Length: 162
Image (cartoon, rainbow, N blue to C red; front, side):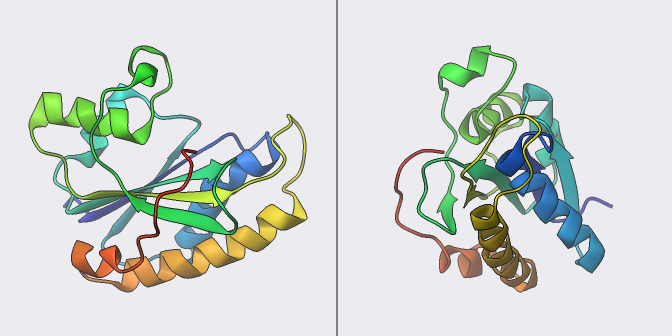
């Protein structure tokens, strides 16, 4: 049976704060939230549109270089963008691929967690570790909320793109 909620985190664990998404998935795995499937990868690709099939909601989680700390939580819409033709895609482009392949995508959100240091081989920065704690608290609330309408109360005004 397909879990109604997919949480998909992406980022490179070897690049300092870029590990924020995968680290959040590790923490959620330890909590084993019901009716949630957790996936992680280095980057988004068109094949990830198929992972969204049969879901009621999808949450993308990534490190952000531009949002205000500790995080930004926004609703996503499908959009064709310049990342569409490269090997890595934006969440909006994955939603657009889903739309073209399968129809209207499920309600989808982005949790961008503020990172500060992304150099290869760097550890997680102290500021990002603090942001990680705040983002985990939000994720636990989201996992306990039964509907996307309940999720909408957590949406923040858009700032800069991650």
